[in-house]
Length: 356
Image 1: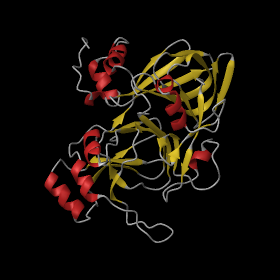
Image 2: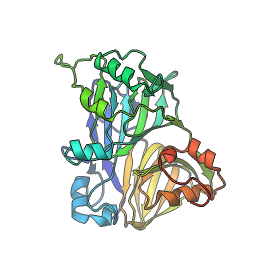
Image 3: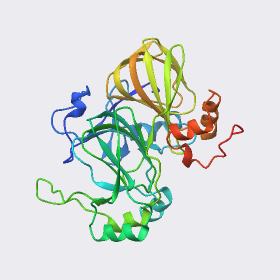
């Protein structure tokens, strides 16, 4: 039962969605799509396995049955990450997510949410909201939010295809229109809306806001938003390290049409394919994958290869972020290059020296 699980996503139709996932090659159903939940065990929104012996079963059921064989020793039956493709055809609400401590106390033990966006496609002049526009005057910001005076309150950050945006828990944020992104996040559905542009649904109803809880969790410090990653080129593959944080690590794999060797020997991973085509080869079998599809690799699947010309984000949760950081230093990058280029490193609290 341990083989590459090609995922069957859950599609979400929100008022800001569009048809850009299909335009970019995703084999998605007709109609407006705002989000494609690629990897989720949220009750009622569980992604399913699309291939092999477990075809049609929810990932949550498979994890519950096979536990550590699927997720590894550290996580038992609790999937730590959630993966989505998002079509921001219009602006999303301005929102914030709690951290683990707040969620555990006030949201019945749920996870908080730190997340990152990999920009797959962006119209000219596209932007995101990340933090506040002027300093960290908590009193002024809180007063403006309570009085619904949102104009000019938030920092707009220009983005382009290939950028990485890191959003730690507590950071006010939003995707503006004209963006398609891969979202990698903690496994959580907690979102506190501050402002939704007074929009209404087909029935004339506004979506609820969560001002009190949002004000509880807001981080008023200005944090770095954009990261470009650091690239290491090998004979068979190009790897760009995009994010290292306590909740997930992300690296971009660019295949060159030569089979690349991988091994799953105790830790799960997932590949979100951005473009191109690939075959995942295991036990003399193959799984074909195309643009904007996701494959989950069980923790104890063993050796496998990926062959093709493609770009994919590989998501994993390492046993030690220190080891990942140290491995990048050994490639010859300086501390400042790593901190300024790879999302999440500045928040690790590590002694950022060659001795790590």
